[in-house]
Length: 95
Image (tube, rainbow, N blue to C red; front, side):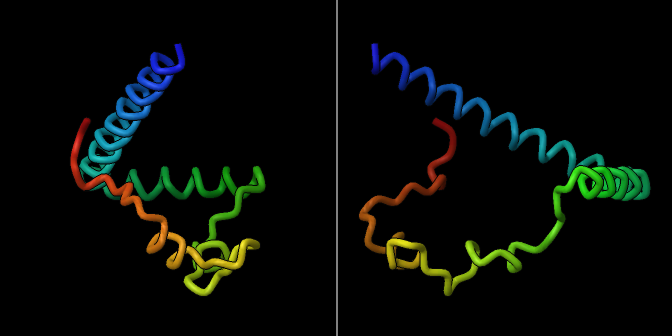
């Protein structure tokens, strides 16, 4: 039962990743075809997010994404990745 749930979750994750990838490519193409409309819509969405309290800032503003950030366990992200022993990159393509 657990294996079936894991397989189902993995298939859903792959589907979602592929969908987002295709959606992002389509959005890029639309932005290139209609740059002025894209900028206008992007500005509208940015204003809406700010009204809802969702800040548009740089990742550099957040200490979590800084290279010198040390989490509570005392190991920084670079050290954690280098010593974790497993490479979970997505360089292999679709599953």
